Amino acid sequence: MIRWFTAGESHGQGLMVIMEGLPAGLPITEEYIGAQLARRQRGYGRGGRMLIEQDWAHIMSGVRHGMTLGSPIGMTLENKDWVNWQEAMSVAAVENYSQEGRNKRVTRIRPGHADLPGAMKHGFEDVRNVLERASARETAARVAAGAIAMRLLEEFGIQLHSHVISIGGVWASPKEPIDWEAVEDSPVRCADPEAASRMIAEIDAAREAGDTVGGTVEVIAENVPIGLGSHTQWDRKLDGRLAQALMSINAVKAVSIGPGWDVVNLRGSQVHDVIDPVTDPDRPWQRKTNRAGGTEGGMTDGMPLVARFGIKPIATLRNPLPSVDLDTGEAVQAHFERSDVCQAPPAGVIGEAMVALVLAEAFMEKFGGDSIPETRRNYQGYMKTVGPRKLFQ
Image 1 (cartoon, rainbow, N blue to C red):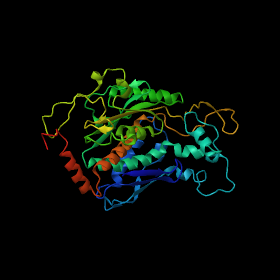
Image 2: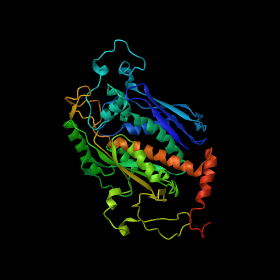
Image 3: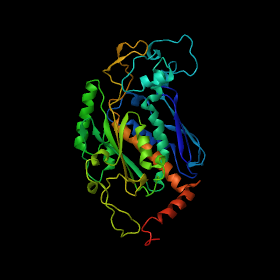
Image 4: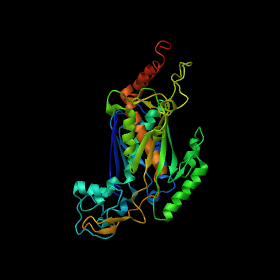
């Protein structure tokens, strides 16, 4: 079973990842992971932090001579901004602790952030104890872990992509098939150039107003084999696991598999994907539509896996909302912590990582193996059985 954990604070010394359950013999490099981390740092609407950080995951363990060993993989990501926060985020107790600048105790609560419930839950008198871990900075560690999961999936032909389909009230109408190179070149990672221009204007308007703006992202996984996940228990259903993973991304408030809410007002005859007769043993169970988003009954159905998620406007506003003080309960303006204007473009890269991690776990549950060759044999043997029961076996 693939498991992974992250640790670290936004302005601490760095982030850490521990990942286990990967088979031995998987080729992986820091450069491959670095390419994914660089994608996360791009995107129109990003804040000044991206000018400081140059994310790089240093592999500490679990890889030798470019190959996984089957043992836990440990990675660290340095926070370049730590040099400016050494006293405020010191691990050791600090004598004569200043209450100026970065050291000042945070008591002005931000509506929409983890500030208030986190402070109440843990009994904190300084909201910084919450906001440092609740920061989206943690997602850099997720992307590092997700890159390794993607590399595993690539060994078996599975490819992941993402694109932005809305920002604010601007919705894209991308042409099929999606030009993924054009998406990567787009400042807002949108496949519709005309909509992308209006999205940029929407972000500019929010920035000018000292406000923030949210959006909708779609993640697509192609060449996913039929049968990942399970119908037998609630917590093994793949669509449920994907929803939990995507909902865990900072500021995500809605998740759907496929078109989601678009189908609830339609009749069944307009929703379900008709299965075509099998004429090619190498491509059984084809469908002309994919309204199910690639899952049925908690399992992948052989069609592309499509997941959408909506990310709310970021809670940290340059023009802060009215709020209250943690100490007194009196009215104040909410705290402002350096932030982005729009997180939708980089959220797609984070979403790819989370989908990859869920798929990799389900893939290893299905096919097992302590080494890539063993997993490949199991996978190939299974794929030979996927077809009409009495024709192609």
